[in-house]
Length: 198
Image 1 (cartoon, rainbow, N blue to C red):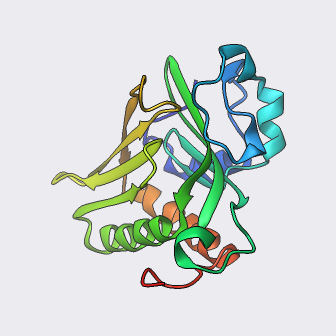
Image 2 (cartoon, rainbow, N blue to C red):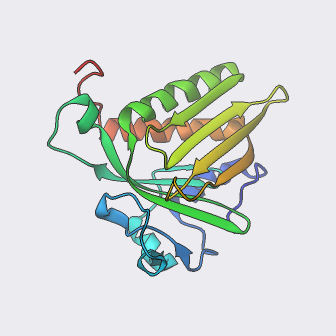
């Protein structure tokens, strides 16, 4: 299954380039529809490892969390609130469990806040940083312990009315630069439009 240990932090770059070959059949969204998964029959959401690889390398990888960014939900919209939604596919997996969600569930403003928090966490080696999604499908919290360990908690669900899934990963500070780089790449490719006051 997916390696969630901090024993080989240098492998984070390799994780970006390929989804684990140990993934077999799993529950996943029909990838690029832009619609959140939820309420669909099980048979409508089964996808093979081969299909997942059509996404290419994940955009963001940290521990057992992988995020593929497919593009803007409303590319022709220029205002802050509608123009900055991203269509994504997200996998969180650990031994014995894998959860997928898909849709326009991450806002670029949330990515910018995650980047700022992670940069501060990397500099000070204390505190926390989070991807605080307004949409209920995903929430990521990274917290530095007093012993220098980075604990990441991921709450993810394809249907927040009927399911709750929480994953915890024991990492270390060496994972932070990859998160910073990946968030910067997202914000470079998809610059924030407008301001919250729009």
